[in-house]
Image (cartoon, rainbow, N blue to C red; front, top):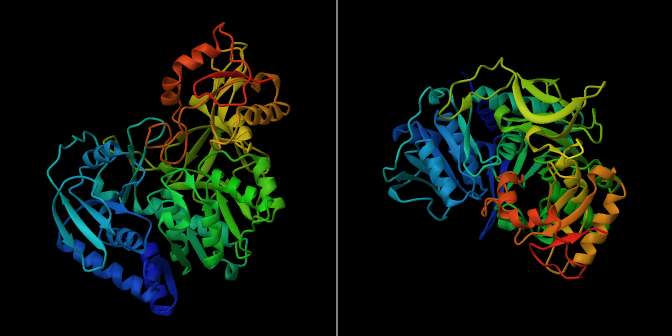
Length: 522
């Protein structure tokens, strides 16, 4: 079956061979690849991979031109590819390698090894290597998805520490890319959407599909830079001055951001640091985004649109756009999927994954329970109210979505991260990661008190605990896409939480933070 993304790249290479497809930055300066050069490198690397031969491989590297070439060449060669997130722990990476039974790894650039290798082969494309693994323990796959129909396996750690492989076909990936192209580019002047800059890791399905496949399918330019060059390190560290400088340098027309990055843009704009006027479309997703944050961004002429997706549906399933937009919603369903509400749960059909690695194959006609709660209004816009499994039920019988309160608290500049607790308890409390070491307990308590004024009494935060460390993927307190691992955080702060809901008196007010100590909100 013809691959629509690769076919489009080949057509662009024939029609506009000198048009720039990819731009990057090395120690020697800017590097550019035309569509003709990109098509050639894909052909050469795919042919070489055929000769190896291999049926599946991992992909390891920083965001780079080489990463994109390796991804597309493996697709052309019919290899099941497993991108390995750079922010996974070594234990998680070893699990993925064993679970996916990877015999080898495509390595992009000169970076550290994931595990012991038996042999390294140099590919015909510069800075792309093939590492053959030392034989490792294999995992038996009973009733498993047929890997010969799977183009990509994306591993998501979800809310537990063990990554789970989501198997996706070529058709599933293409469907999302084409639906996004239609939704985004039908509502704006396409002449003003020529350059997309990758901010999120390419191992993240959202950036891989929406930030690479979509613009290349349409013959646009992709700027791909290592996270460190953009001021992004790990999965949650951000240097806003560096990021703003690079945005002004490359003048992109579109970006994909997480709510934390959008909040940084708004804060910077409020202080007079402007975003480049070239930006026409910024998609925000990955976690709940407060409507008030979208409103603040729009008031500062930041063209942001919220969307929603699932790895199990090959990423995006709904998106706001300039021609169909409602703040507070995650937009209308894309044309390739059906969405309905069943007892408050959001159900999706039409582009469902092939199944989890090692489990039975799923039918594309089945309704998939997203695990999210929400509703669809009379205009067809989808609203997310929280995760089904995260719902807190107070001792007074109130159903409370912690994500709702967390989204409001995340607007406080004194707070970097927050998790709301209170299941089966008379009131809500929060575990807080301050925005910096200089933030005082007094500032945070004042900010929370201000937010509380706009919340119903049952949702107000009455006590807080200062976290002993930030929530990150490396300490297993955050998922790869920035969601809280609630069970792990609850376990880590078990004693402090017990103190909150016991008869023990909370600490007297102090302007200093004391990690693990309980404070009352006055």
